[in-house]
Amino acid sequence: MPLYRYFCAACRSQFEIRHSYTAPITQCQGCESDQIERLLDMPVPHLNRLKTPHKGVGEEVRNAIEEAKDGLEVQKEELRKKNQ
Image (cartoon, rainbow, N blue to C red):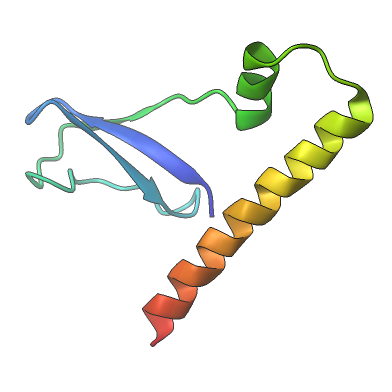
């Protein structure tokens, strides 16, 4: 599931939550206010290109695959804990 960032206007906090696109969050995780809005994020591969010098296409693909694997492992672990 994708990771979404939110901002709460009531308590002025930001928080991140993983959820499906069809099940948006409607309340702040801290103060339970409904004055939240989803923040836009730049995809991670684009951020990496901005931070690092130019690489070959193959190396960028390998890095993207490794980042995706890491994200999947985090999601698997969260699901394991949830199902226990």
